[in-house]
Length: 351
Image 1 (cartoon, rainbow, N blue to C red):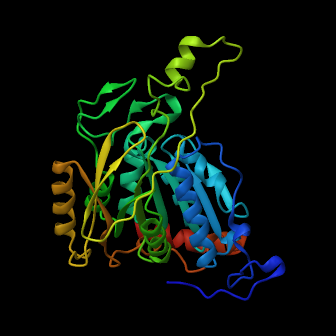
Image 2 (tube, rainbow, N blue to C red):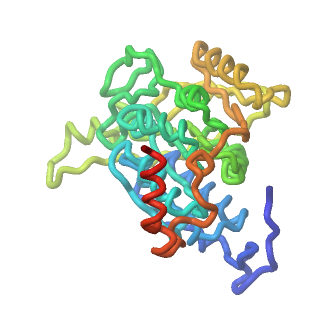
């Protein structure tokens, strides 16, 4: 879905249906490492929100804790935002959306925030089918605490300081489908076109929770031992004035490949991952096929990308709980507080 664009406004800037140019959808300058995949995702959110003419004051941005959870500060500066406790973003967003069902929730979490401390909240959010776009910026490490393996790290993966990961990964897309989520997709931060199209689809999805798991390279561990600009060289030779770390800026990893094909991608730390883009013959409405495809990909240590599963048939939490059409936040006190007679009737019915 693409919204029309108006004629150029002041300064020649193109305007969307609301009369806003793209700068109205930007956020604060990023403080993440230069070249981080998370910044690429924020850029696509800005582009899509402008293109779809989202009303900024109708958007709520939520997140937990971690590098990924800083991301909402970097887009949609004019919308509402809340950075919650580690792994608790789902319950926070559930409360906000229940209070005002007209809000568009865009929530960002990481693989640690979702797959470890927040896994229970993630599963119950999906079970309740809360209407929101849930973006997982997935890099397989805890970047904010110096690079421990997260729950999504591949078995056998090596990290410079953490050694070898001996445990199998949790596939958050598989978990989403198993929990009844009706929109599940995966992409790669460097594939801007695919991320953009899947974001549009997720924001247009009206069936409840839309999960978009995006593989997002972390540059922090790309430090060559031979380089005099590496972390290890600096650590060994520094004269410490302050307790700070230097992360060498890196270029963003960008990929472009055809549907139905696979592409090997070299990461910043020298490791490789294999991306396989779903082809036209794939049916995203077949739940069992989606699960089989993910199982097959995990066995091969590949990442399949695209829309994995879609189903608009489930009740959203508002329908399941029989919540009135008017947003609760817009009801007056008399409407929110039932009269004595209504309470008496409820009590009588319970006898």
